[in-house]
Image 1 (cartoon, helix red, strand yellow):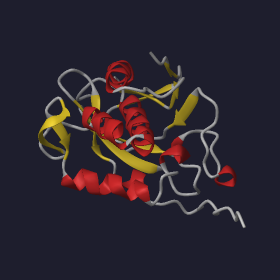
Image 2: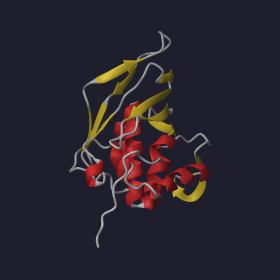
Image 3: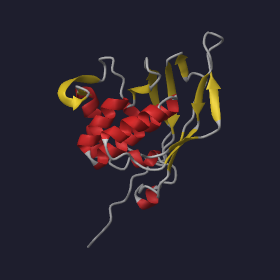
Image 4: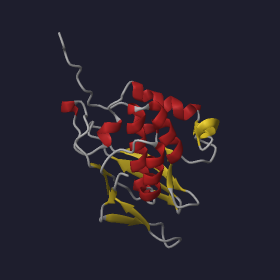
Length: 201
């Protein structure tokens, strides 16, 4: 099982005194990618106890999708909110669910930009076509004064090495305390720094 490390430095955000501060680590480090849906779920249950942990698991799901579409879709099913907005019933899917048409459309954008998920990993660069560095993998995050929408809904931002502004991910905490993804469309669009195709002639 891959080990996950949450950085000690966290940001505590809250709205007034309506509810306790939400702990949001600004750095998450993972020592490798899960190779099965069982490993992914176990990792999710350990790391997605914070909003940035949930966002990190989204990136892991996207990385797996580029490598193995079938596994990636199962991972996406496990990290997306199960409120009817992103998943559909599917007897053959993970837990009887799979991403709905809108989510699948977003995922297909990665066929044009397969390097995009890599750009969220610290240490990647357009100079080497966003190749992943050696594990462990580190992800950084940021927030703003509007990040905490309510006690169970938070928006965090993931920087990209592709030259774009940090990209938002909205997460909702479920009744088991797991932060799952509600909105991530910005994470699958292209980058301003595009890798150059090699000339093999």
